[in-house]
Image (cartoon, rainbow, N blue to C red; front, side):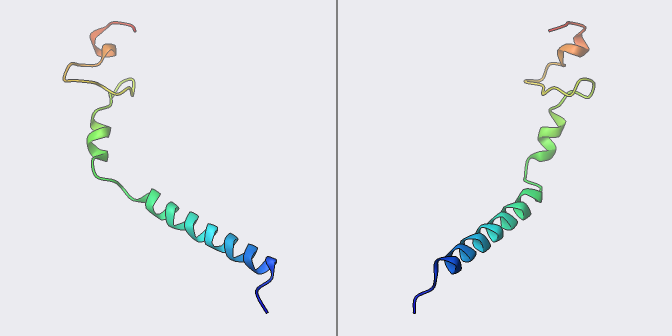
Length: 63
């Protein structure tokens, strides 16, 4: 006798939960380049700096 519809639903739900768990584990990993991104932020205001010039908050300008 083939599996009933409820068996299939249970299998789909279990596979979904396993997939979500695997994605959560990968999400907690630290990816390469994360230190570099943190260093690219301004220490005063927290915005990302583009280029080598200081942030506009350090220059005294308001944007």
